[in-house]
Amino acid sequence: MLKKKIVFLILPDVQILDLGGPLQTFYEANVYGANYQIELCSLKPNEKSEQYLQFINLKHFSEIKLNNDDMILIPGFNGSYLSKDELAKFDPAIFDWLRLANTNGATICSICNAAFVLAYAGLLDGKKCTTHWYRFEQLAKEYPNVNVMTNRLFVKDGNIYSSAGITAGIDLALSLIEDDYGPVFTAKIAKELVVYMRRDSQHSQLSTYLDYRTHLNSSIHKVQDYIINHPSHKVKLDSLAEIAGMSSRNLTRIFKKETGLTINEFTNKIRLELAKDLMNNPDLTIENIARECGFEDPRQFRRLWKLQSGVSPSDSRRLLMVSNL
Image 1 (cartoon, rainbow, N blue to C red):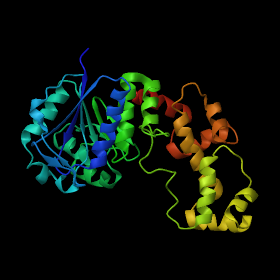
Image 2 (cartoon, one colour; image 1 turned 60 degrees about the vertical axis):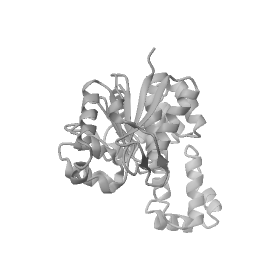
Image 3 (cartoon, rainbow, N blue to C red; image 1 turned 120 degrees about the vertical axis):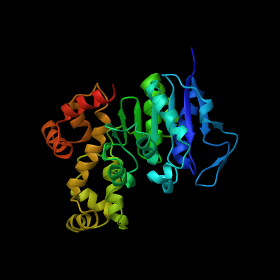
Image 4 (tube, rainbow, N blue to C red; image 1 turned 90 degrees about the vertical axis):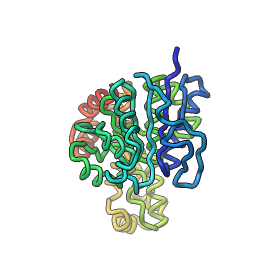
């Protein structure tokens, strides 16, 4: 059995975590018995990351021949190279190489702003994709034929994947490994990487767990931490007030002032975030998920889910199954 090539294309001033996260993930998969041939290539023998690390003796991309089972991952790089004028200064053969790999059926993945490379090569025309949230508007403006998804952590369209930046590359790599080796094997890799809450493609880049926490009120942070760690608990307001060290009335007022949400609204957002993870488990019914997340009943869960996503939980699950095909 031929090893599946996992080829990382290192561009000038690569972002080190965009590269290192997925690279470590595939490396750990090999440690656990996967059959990947990991290769690094570039446009020139020596390259550096934007964080000052040096790479030497890199293969030239043209030396690597790809089969339809192989995969190219392109980590993000310095944003000053993203304009069409700057990309036009790259060796045009790199774009021919990517187009040929795509034609031959290889999987091509962009991480962070590397979506601009695929768009420039014409590989995203008429396709759905994503990039780092900071670049949504720029990508959509420069490439109007590309459907930029702003509410996805990573996107698959045909044999092309695109993902958000930084740690999202790890989530993408775990998903790709799961496609090859299944969920049980991949769970071992996630555990090795200390990734205890995996995010699938349906997750937004802007995390509910980090939203509404830009304030500096430590008492409200304690209440938020408790709600996040006990989403299914039906906690009384008096108990939360005790955690915050203030009266119930004062907590209600200050929580809304600091977060912009009522305690109930914040709790429901956390429960819906948990529900996103549980929706991936085919053994759980909608009723099971509603109970596990602490909703009053399945009706409340369905109503809040549809209010947030625009479709019912059942329809969301069907869409998720289709996207994973």
